[in-house]
Image (cartoon, rainbow, N blue to C red):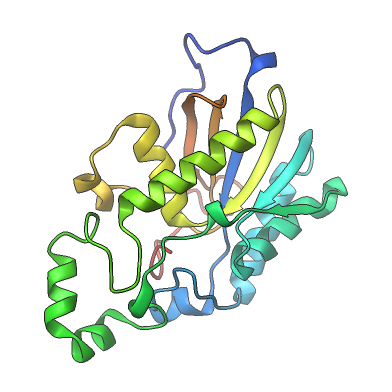
Amino acid sequence: MSHFPRKIGTMEPAKKRATLILVRHGETEWNLDGRIQGHSDSPLTARGSQQGRQAAERLAGMNISAVYASDLGRALDTGELIAAPHGLEVRTMLGLRERCYGAFEGKTAEEIRASDPDGFERWLSDRQRLAPPGGETQAELAGRVMRALHEIAGAHLGETVAVATHGGPIKSALFAVLDIPVDSWDRAWVSNGSVTVLCGTREEFKVASFNDTSHFEARIEQARGVEN
């Protein structure tokens, strides 16, 4: 688990900024199998549901004004766990979806390599800048995710909002806000059920914390499965 300082420097006064609590969905069956999910879906495991409940318990005592989620089942289920203690309905946004991996979805790396070795190796050579067949580039993912987050922030200035989404969108937000090059993508990990906090407006964000898993028994969770 890593943290960033909670002091946010020269940001606008608190009443004029939103606090977005980004929660990665709980572990899924395909996470365990090492299958690429993207816009496809698989159900939460028992452990994944427990991770969602633990995240929900952590946020239960906070004054949450709204809960948003990707419309994909694994994120929506996590969002509903978070929303329940607050008596809120989850608002879904397509912009919060995981990166689309097109033809690679539902497959393991070994299966993709066996069916399309040349295409898979070509994508692996620059997988953050190249799109899988029928999928998105990293830049396309980051663009839609940041538009969605800024839209949410602009609608909830002075409020705290929970956002249930995926590893790719959360890491994209981190890299975009801190201007980290995509070549460093594999140097950060987003754990299932972890909490990342952004503070900002319709125009800009600051990172308050990243990949916080202190609501789990273990302070640092074992990285498991694929991050999508």
